[in-house]
Image (cartoon, rainbow, N blue to C red; front, side):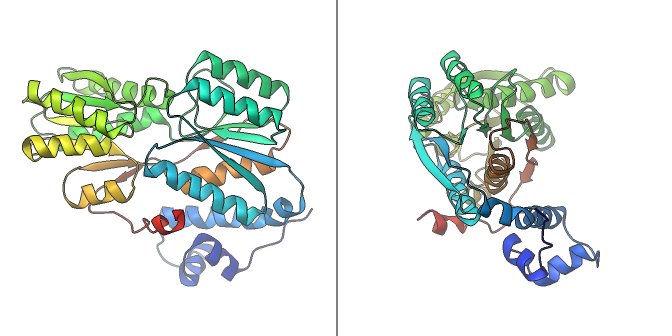
Length: 342
């Protein structure tokens, strides 16, 4: 099927940018940001393949995400819904207990029994998950791990280069932290390979460039704000010399609350992940210093592209999304997705 060239107005509507910006990018008239160029390129790709997506019968795809995992997961689910609706494909949404491999195994098995055309899920590094995924691979069902993948796996993965993200967080911590006292790492869950990679990258940076910096033992918060609050509060009572906190996972709300309650953050650099309405407010109030961000819309779009272009073939694609460094000086107004969720 021959692809149709999208019109300027269609590209503007699909990318969410103005006609003038699209014209400048396509005709190389003046300076445009890399983000705008990327959004336009992605919009053209989606439009060029739109007729193919809509005219081909793919069956029903499945999305599996952790329940009560924070706003960033809600954003991801919303973008999946929007993208699937635009493409005219059927996408079933499932929610599993957070960090529960038995529940995730059960839902993946249910999807396979129901004849799924492809499964996207946030992976857990656990033997039962690997076992049931072998059944899916044997059936040639496309699989995509989103946000967190599996180690030593040929599974499609869409998300950050998490080791690089951890090293980026360490670089920013070193640049902002003048005292370089002890630094705590608060991570969300021992079954997320992505969290392990972030921690490994963070520590490796300091081994390379600041080996004398003390990294306080990792505190696992199970991606739970209340548990993160308790753990960080207890840590601050014992370690009054703490100069920085890197929150790897979803415990940023509890972490910030604990630091604010203890000493109003003075002298403590805080770095977290994912720009949401919560972390945006924290940035503006100087409660955190840096957010390492991954664009959930890109993750959803790239995953749906894999499903539509790779149906029943199980090819492997490289679909890393850019690591974005967000501070209070460059926050973009993209939090209107709160209205989309509802």
